[in-house]
Image (cartoon, rainbow, N blue to C red):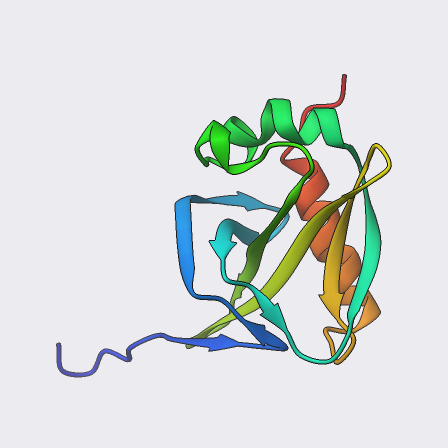
Length: 130
Protein backbone atom coordinates (compact mmCIF):
# COMPACT_ATOMS: atom_id res chain seq x y z
CA UNK A 1 0.00 0.00 0.00
CA UNK A 2 2.97 2.31 0.04
CA UNK A 3 2.56 5.22 -2.34
CA UNK A 4 -1.25 4.92 -2.46
CA UNK A 5 -3.39 7.78 -1.24
CA UNK A 6 -6.55 7.03 0.65
CA UNK A 7 -9.75 8.74 -0.43
CA UNK A 8 -11.68 10.72 2.14
CA UNK A 9 -15.33 11.69 2.34
CA UNK A 10 -16.13 15.37 2.83
CA UNK A 11 -19.77 16.01 3.70
CA UNK A 12 -20.86 19.56 2.88
CA UNK A 13 -23.76 21.67 4.13
CA UNK A 14 -25.33 19.00 6.33
CA UNK A 15 -25.07 15.47 7.69
CA UNK A 16 -26.62 12.00 7.48
CA UNK A 17 -26.58 8.95 9.74
CA UNK A 18 -26.94 5.94 7.46
CA UNK A 19 -27.15 4.77 3.84
CA UNK A 20 -29.65 2.40 2.21
CA UNK A 21 -29.43 0.35 -0.96
CA UNK A 22 -26.75 0.84 -3.59
CA UNK A 23 -25.29 4.00 -5.07
CA UNK A 24 -26.48 4.84 -8.60
CA UNK A 25 -24.72 7.00 -11.17
CA UNK A 26 -26.06 9.81 -13.37
CA UNK A 27 -24.36 12.80 -15.00
CA UNK A 28 -21.07 12.56 -13.04
CA UNK A 29 -22.92 12.18 -9.71
CA UNK A 30 -23.43 9.18 -7.44
CA UNK A 31 -26.80 9.19 -5.65
CA UNK A 32 -27.73 7.07 -2.64
CA UNK A 33 -30.72 6.99 -0.30
CA UNK A 34 -29.73 8.24 3.16
CA UNK A 35 -31.36 8.39 6.58
CA UNK A 36 -31.10 10.96 9.33
CA UNK A 37 -30.42 13.80 6.89
CA UNK A 38 -29.96 17.19 8.53
CA UNK A 39 -29.12 20.36 6.59
CA UNK A 40 -27.22 23.43 7.77
CA UNK A 41 -29.25 26.65 7.82
CA UNK A 42 -32.78 26.56 6.49
CA UNK A 43 -34.12 24.26 3.78
CA UNK A 44 -34.59 25.68 0.29
CA UNK A 45 -37.00 23.52 -1.72
CA UNK A 46 -36.58 23.08 -5.48
CA UNK A 47 -38.79 21.24 -7.97
CA UNK A 48 -37.50 17.85 -9.13
CA UNK A 49 -39.89 17.77 -12.14
CA UNK A 50 -41.09 14.36 -10.92
CA UNK A 51 -44.56 13.45 -9.76
CA UNK A 52 -45.00 11.74 -6.42
CA UNK A 53 -46.55 8.71 -8.16
CA UNK A 54 -43.57 8.46 -10.49
CA UNK A 55 -41.10 8.51 -7.59
CA UNK A 56 -42.99 5.88 -5.59
CA UNK A 57 -43.34 3.56 -8.60
CA UNK A 58 -39.79 3.91 -9.96
CA UNK A 59 -37.60 4.52 -6.88
CA UNK A 60 -36.80 0.83 -6.23
CA UNK A 61 -35.05 0.61 -9.63
CA UNK A 62 -34.05 4.26 -10.17
CA UNK A 63 -32.49 4.66 -6.72
CA UNK A 64 -31.80 0.97 -5.93
CA UNK A 65 -33.67 1.06 -2.62
CA UNK A 66 -36.36 -1.10 -1.03
CA UNK A 67 -39.88 -0.30 -2.28
CA UNK A 68 -41.11 0.44 1.24
CA UNK A 69 -38.55 3.24 1.63
CA UNK A 70 -40.70 5.65 -0.37
CA UNK A 71 -44.42 5.75 0.30
CA UNK A 72 -46.91 8.58 0.31
CA UNK A 73 -46.58 11.16 1.70
CA UNK A 74 -42.98 11.25 0.53
CA UNK A 75 -40.42 12.29 3.13
CA UNK A 76 -36.84 11.17 3.00
CA UNK A 77 -33.30 11.97 2.13
CA UNK A 78 -30.41 11.07 -0.09
CA UNK A 79 -26.86 12.14 -0.78
CA UNK A 80 -25.36 13.32 -4.04
CA UNK A 81 -21.66 12.54 -4.25
CA UNK A 82 -19.09 13.76 -6.75
CA UNK A 83 -15.66 12.16 -6.95
CA UNK A 84 -12.75 14.58 -6.98
CA UNK A 85 -9.07 13.61 -7.24
CA UNK A 86 -8.53 12.53 -3.61
CA UNK A 87 -11.84 13.38 -1.98
CA UNK A 88 -15.48 12.38 -2.40
CA UNK A 89 -17.75 15.42 -1.95
CA UNK A 90 -21.14 14.47 -0.49
CA UNK A 91 -24.16 16.76 -0.32
CA UNK A 92 -27.03 15.58 1.93
CA UNK A 93 -30.47 16.45 0.52
CA UNK A 94 -34.09 16.06 1.55
CA UNK A 95 -37.13 14.91 -0.43
CA UNK A 96 -40.75 15.83 0.18
CA UNK A 97 -44.09 15.67 -1.52
CA UNK A 98 -45.83 18.97 -2.23
CA UNK A 99 -49.16 18.48 -3.96
CA UNK A 100 -48.34 15.80 -6.53
CA UNK A 101 -44.81 17.10 -7.05
CA UNK A 102 -41.57 15.85 -5.49
CA UNK A 103 -39.29 18.59 -4.21
CA UNK A 104 -35.60 18.38 -3.31
CA UNK A 105 -34.40 20.31 -0.27
CA UNK A 106 -30.98 21.97 -0.30
CA UNK A 107 -29.24 23.77 2.54
CA UNK A 108 -29.50 27.55 2.41
CA UNK A 109 -25.73 27.59 3.00
CA UNK A 110 -24.90 25.71 -0.22
CA UNK A 111 -24.14 24.30 -2.70
CA UNK A 112 -24.25 27.07 -5.30
CA UNK A 113 -26.98 27.25 -7.96
CA UNK A 114 -24.92 25.52 -10.67
CA UNK A 115 -24.24 22.50 -8.44
CA UNK A 116 -27.91 22.39 -7.40
CA UNK A 117 -28.96 22.29 -11.07
CA UNK A 118 -26.45 19.49 -11.76
CA UNK A 119 -27.78 17.43 -8.85
CA UNK A 120 -31.42 17.98 -9.89
CA UNK A 121 -30.58 16.92 -13.47
CA UNK A 122 -28.79 13.79 -12.24
CA UNK A 123 -31.71 12.91 -9.95
CA UNK A 124 -34.27 13.36 -12.75
CA UNK A 125 -32.16 11.33 -15.21
CA UNK A 126 -32.54 8.23 -13.01
CA UNK A 127 -36.30 8.19 -13.64
CA UNK A 128 -37.98 7.06 -16.85
CA UNK A 129 -40.36 9.57 -18.39
CA UNK A 130 -43.79 8.12 -19.08
